Image (cartoon, rainbow, N blue to C red; front, side, top):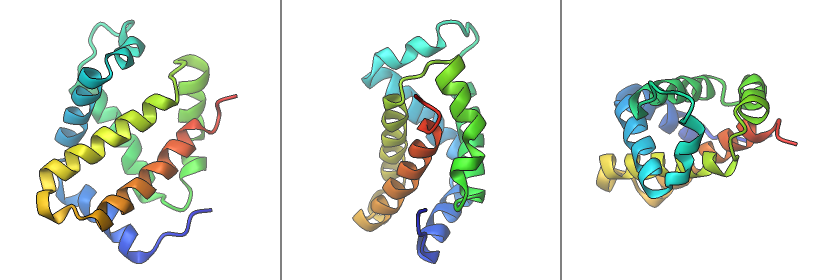
Length: 137
């Protein structure tokens, strides 16, 4: 189990509350698809796919993670099964996306995105990626 300090909880919750995370998510997905073009293969069956549309889904899941920071693994169990068994998403893609989200947050927050804050986000996303990758065999 991960230990969260109050500062870490506050940073993650505050950012989700005060930042246009939909835009951050959309830009992060666009960045991922541009820099890592093979990640688009998971969306070939979805003809109505847009980065913005999927960002809403991703951000909804991340919002659940923010609200349940002590229980992300159980919250993501079904989501993990879906990504592993139905969608066959390479779990490495989750790291690519979370790295792109961090880049977007750093770009948006500029000087306020200190190495310390970066570390909090790395920790949060490591827990998220671990949780969504749990059902892979």
